[in-house]
Length: 372
Image 1 (tube, rainbow, N blue to C red):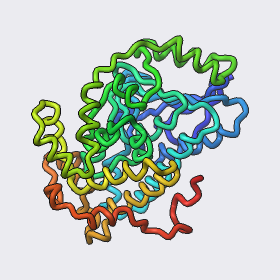
Image 2 (image 1 turned 90 degrees about the horizontal axis):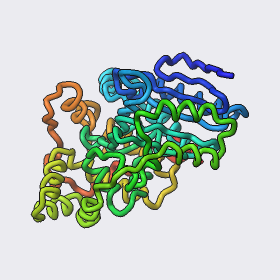
Image 3 (image 1 turned 45 degrees about the horizontal axis):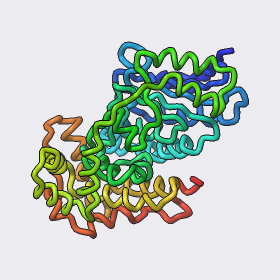
Image 4 (image 1 turned 90 degrees about the vertical axis):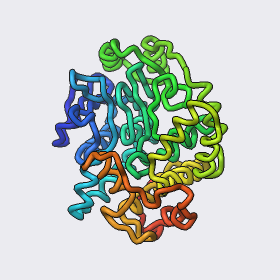
């Protein structure tokens, strides 16, 4: 029996098919970027299915321009961030609190959660897929945590899962925001299996038709549909360990400048386009989060994101913050010329960075205080 649940959000399609709760992100024109109504629909759906005996597993996919698959999720709705700040809309605070609660729910979901990470999987899309029991990529997958490109930091538990990538590949991903393919995603422990994109529809249907969806059945299903995926990034990951393991962004950049390779030059050029201040914050986050639980990391990220839009310790508010300047340059004016402050990594002081790690709330009032 097929059963449809509606939470008045046409951008999240939900259906129970057999023993599988099926979710389709349905905002293809925006590459399924997450809005607050979408986050609320996902939270409500997962909480309802958590207690539904019929649902033995949950599968999530994105809608592409030509139908299901082809795009997973490009992240959070950046235009909404800008509009909310300019209008002093308090829903900006709700967005991050509820998104991070959703990330936590997925990581700790008591039933298998399967993410079909086809096409673009970035930012918030990583947040709703990295906690999955089974993370499926394809040769079309383009994965990234590109937040430093807009003067933000890799949130949605990015500190937690990037800090657990092998070697220093997590620091590299976090600082550069570069895009990786399926082979790199598997090698960096950000994916579990690669499927043929032409067979995703058949795999989805077979999953829904399974008489029982337990770990053994899922493993057999995944093995049936998996394909080999070449890893061409081993040499680059050795360089990541060499350079991105250094103790500061300034020293990373200096070492890249001294190196004589195309890889080092390309990475140095990328880092010089990012916000020096938010790169320093990002590096500190990833390294702190290595020793944190998921809940601790999400609470810390919630602190940092408040400072991103209201930087009290820097006396910068709204449009004057690094994040709003990055969004302006990338998405609003599209001049691709952000005026970062400070402009050079050498001008970033420890005090500037430290302020981002001071919670704006006492522990009893923290918006994510109930995360276990």
